[in-house]
Length: 207
Image: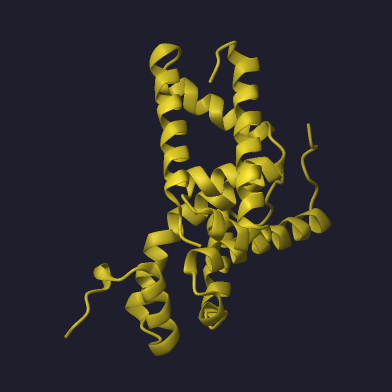
């Protein structure tokens, strides 16, 4: 029976590529994640006020997928492609940031997802939508959220991006940033409070 790639999960695609070097499976994985990894890399360099020289975000994204390609055998131990991909992406960003610091000037610094996680995401989204409807326009809130994310310390902003934007669960984030799932949940909760505080200071509205 022929298996259609679109019917496979990301983990099944990764296992197919690891075992059989199925190029179509690898292409499907890249299509699924290239845009998300682009945003993740873009945000990390923007948040850390690092100016890229001689490279752009697309170059770094390409290098990330090359590194994943070369290290795909780690998937057998990891068992979670998203966690493997984002951990490699995160490490790659750290490596590239160090290279950029050494070579160019930098801008000054001015296991299964639970129902509770889904409820928390939905509650934040509902809060955001209500906030938009009751106070300011959608474009303004998006701009405001981006501005506040830029002002948060990296450890707070990172978990918000991974959890709410990239939709990784606690266990996946824990593997990426080397914390326990419980510690990840606490960090996300603290990060959300700091984000709300930033919005409240800037607008005077409760969020």
